[in-house]
Image (cartoon, rainbow, N blue to C red; front, side):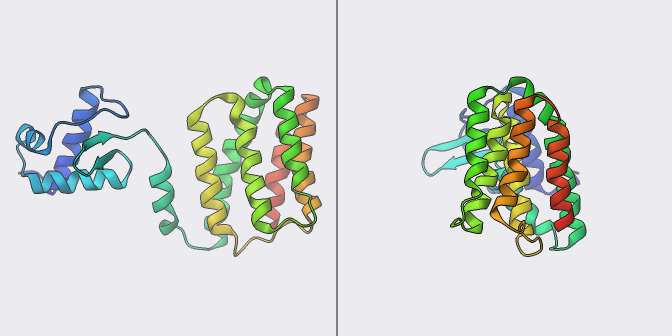
Length: 219
């Protein structure tokens, strides 16, 4: 007798089915009746299993159109992780350490691929942060754009998703507990320091480390 509930057993079998057949994003699964027969389970349990896998972004069901394998995404993690965190300094500090470790670890690799056009765009984004009439939301949007653009030369969609994931979670949780830099100009300068270091091809890791140290201090 299985120790798992029927729907969980069905989820395990569905994941194995996808892996064993090498199904990729966009591939359609057989009809529910056929899968239920293959797995030896009831259609109700199978339907519950499919709904669970939809929640975590593995599958997508179109009404009257079948069930499809979804592209890998961290979006479902983003939707669920905030419930696991409390708005406490320790939780935010732990999350910040993960984000800092990712970006500090990748900045040297990004510097190998970054081009003049990339640097010009990054400088423009950072400079825009200093606008006196910008709102906190404007500056937050520019900050996200900067960090995303910084790692685009790596051409690694997984890195981009990870940057988005940590940025979204951290900024969703930190707005009530972390003060902004004293002026928009200070925020802009922290990012311009990174661009300057990348332009000089020297000190980019130190510049990124200082950036996160500033956030730690405010946290």
